[in-house]
Length: 465
Ligand code: URP
Ligand code: ZN
Ligand code: ZN
Image (cartoon, rainbow, N blue to C red; front, top):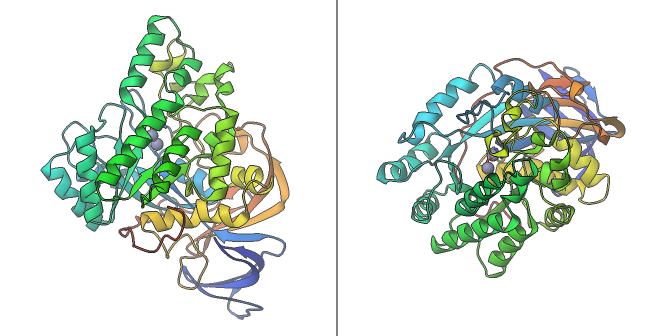
């Protein structure tokens, strides 16, 4: 089946031009002016932008956090993602039972995703302890299409500095990349207990127990460990504050290479004032929401290239159910918030339409960079012949309001309720098939495929990393 997307304004990370796109089967065949083909179905994109399908490299579908489970499984969560213009995800696998190898969770997650995901998906490995077997298994995971691993510096299965150094060395050897959740665990635990003892159990104390400097300290530590591992590739997930960004800039000023930084819409747009609202539990996530000054610093970092990726950390728990576990004690609330559907709308409306970032930068940070860093490029994240026909047609003139009833996930709220949005998604295509039209999901359960990702390619990444 052939399709021609006619008269769209195509944006890539560098270009902005008017052209037609010919799609044959699952792939982009050619791009040019006035393409015609009697056999092709024509999709009129006049007046609209056409961008690569967005890629979300930080989701937690069906995440088991022990006290509960994220409420979007791989079906609900990927339907929501698709409706928000995301055509691939790379999901962070949960911790497994103590002592298991990396492949244990891979097997679990294959079963969670297969037959459910409606868009293409990959997984990041999760390192929950380090020994010779785990180090050897990192190479085997990469050979199986998982050249990335996540290390947590807080939570139950956090790694210590020696663990981190060994992982970084090994990942560098295999051209893999290590993603880090950076918070100083001892400081956070101490402050949580202090507030609890003082009877300070409201949601705002979640934020107070996880200060900016507790994150920045851990970011700085990881960067130094990466430097000790001969500039091993390091990816900081959900960076949320100006001090952490400063630590990254300082490391780069010192000449350190291979540092990649992700932030999320919630850290660009929402502030700690949310914790004072009566529904403050909705915003319990780690790191917590910060101040307006932090949001502005992150926008600047996004605009000047200090930040490479905007992902979502989608990890939804119902406000009326799971989140209520924290109503008398913030430490008992499952951490995480939804956001997989809202990302592109928010970044266009609050970023591009308000002049904070360019449209090219949006494409770079939501589509192209995630693919280059995590081995999905050039099949995904770009509009060029040979790439998968994963595309979003976006109408910048249309507007709307974000409201829960228009969202497609299983969770009972959106963090952005009532926000007015400039720009709307008209159509989403995955590998040449229209899967979203006029806010409706029209794709197929289980049509998503596992993406066998490649190791980090030297020289592919030309940005200020
Ligand atoms: O609070 C959050 N972010 N929950 C999801 C797990 C994580 O730390 O990324
Ligand atoms: Zn995290
Ligand atoms: Zn996360």
